[in-house]
Amino acid sequence: MEEEIKIVEGKKIISESQIKMITQIAQIKLFCAIHKSVSISDSDNWRVMADSTAATKDVENWIRSEFLPKKYHQAFAKRKLGVQSGGEFECDAVSDDGKIVCFISTSPSKTADGKPDADVLGKIREKALWAVSLNEKPETIVFAFTDKSMVELIKQEKENGRFPKHIKTLLVKLPAK
Image (cartoon, rainbow, N blue to C red; front, side, top):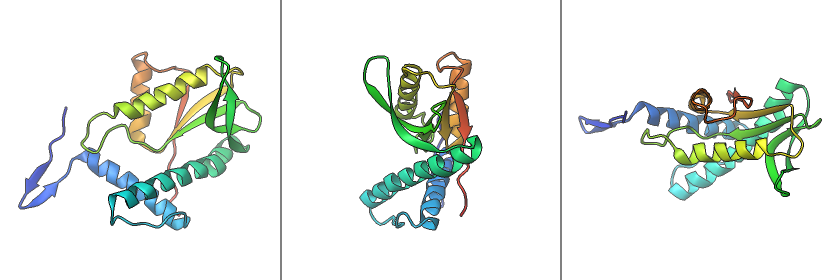
């Protein structure tokens, strides 16, 4: 089902998925402005892209240093863990006791034009593959999403047998201040 974009009286009416994406970007920018981590500028595409990359890192750091410790009552850090193939894989957040491994995503499940974002889903599946191939199996594997559409997509993927059922998902609500 493709969403339609209409022009009414010279004004562009955008789709619901575009509104959701714009809202999420605004939330991330607000979060970063409050935490004084990046300047907010929409003047050039490259600047917005640079801002969003920095904003994503700041949101990931907040989830790792504030949200996860509050939820699980212990500290988390980015850490490389050994995998069965002999190498290492960098996990977004690993609990101090090593029993919880978390991967963080700030991406929506759809592109700006409302189509499913196959690249984002591919990256999530890739991280899930690495998670299940860790040498030392954590008690809990979690994906923390800032976008509700991703939680819903992964739920659907699990129901259709295309994502490991034992991997948990969390919806992280970003603070207003």
